[in-house]
Length: 378
Image 1 (cartoon, rainbow, N blue to C red):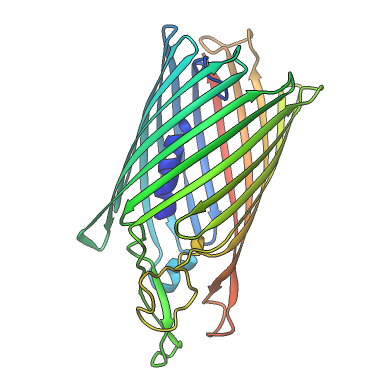
Image 2 (cartoon, rainbow, N blue to C red):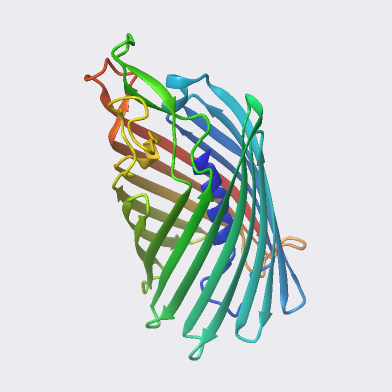
């Protein structure tokens, strides 16, 4: 649940920019998408619909509906609870306002589950400068979460988060464009999962260990800096490289790097991407604690473990309606399919279903993410 509520917040925040450069309103467009995630005993799938529409030369509006249907028998669930199914409904509304070289954007997103409600408000302003060669973007988002428990209607905890961002996009040459981003996120409130447990050594247990609830700090501040560059090759293809460094007050440090190649071929566009991520663990993470309540804060979420992940992406787009050869109100149309294969090595999180205490293997996750969507410009 914590991972998905972070995704809700970040999705809203990243939805604001709309285009790499400011000074241009997003095109009128509609998208219909189906997504599916399979891995680690978890299946998440559902549809999404997005519509953008201009109102005159200065205003553009966007609306989005997104549905997740979750079926989980993950390693966390099967070791301490029963498999479950649930549904998450998300919708958002946004507005872009263009005045001269300045673009202002507002966005609101709501996400609702049986045991979790999230609301996020976001704003950004972009300014084109120096002959439109430089774009400066300032961003802010505020989120409010209400955390509950499906087995306890009286359980209610609150969490708030704020996201500050600044970015500079620079056209360096006719073929090279680069973006430098810095962001800070502050969280305050109930930050752990109400269902997740940690384990500790217990000689009185037949397993050699027992479980107790997680306990996280009530504050977290993270900082990240990222650099992305895209180079357009002579034959209409493009190369993109990206690096991001992350650190937070829970003592996690992360390094992420990726490389993307985009190649058009007639009505098709092919994309290949490789992403590498490596991080240290949180200060209060342990695979197993020496005793009950051994430390002030305790966590065994595998995403707080030291880990290394690799992601391979393949994507193909087919333009079935070319510009100026549209159909009715539609000027252009594309059909898109992408597949991401994710492999994660957890360096200190054990698969406790693999053997007895002391003989357990470290957990590894393999997952596939599929997306199929059609886009129309009108």
